[in-house]
Image (cartoon, rainbow, N blue to C red; front, side, top):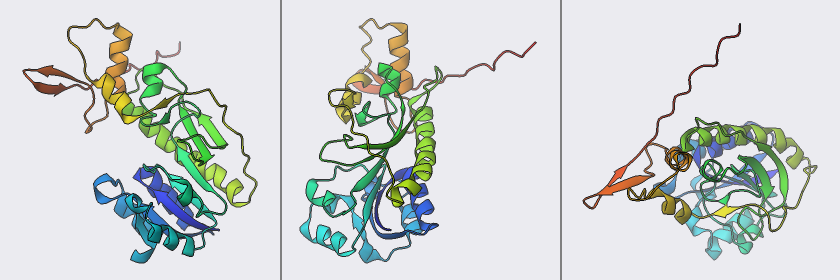
Length: 256
């Protein structure tokens, strides 16, 4: 199978390594620009492609880029933690469609920060492999798995577990995809939740003159704890003071 990989982050790197070690061929890579890339050099090294087969994600609307991708004769696109929305003309490059690896239990937590909202809203957390369509994380589901949210989780710890589960589920599901035996289950329309980046920004400002419930405040602080990234904050004399929450769980009681 000839694959164009659209990848970023640790999960994208691991997916690239997995594919490179198998019988399929990565014929092209679409990478984030340097200022938005994570594990960019590692992904590029795993793909082992000449520069003319590596494209920048912010150029995907350019006609010449789409023509160059189509000229690679891909069978399938694979999107892993890719931070750009693919328009219909880009999706049309892939005869077999484009599969996406998303760290959310769809249809819940479509869009941004799927590691935050299960803590804030008590929605299901998990990972999903699905086909991309014209919407944002709305395409047919191939496989998915729930990931429990623990009382001691932060946004960072939940994200790491979602990353690991994404890679595990991808490796389990890929043989079905490449064999053409992957199931397709439409998502339930009207169900689930979706968020944009500004939704997280809206909860970050902690109002010192407002009354919060204990659970509400702790959940905001732990959900937005993801160092070195900034999250929740208070303001003093026009300056923001950023907050992080450390949670330590005592060991379970010894069996008697």
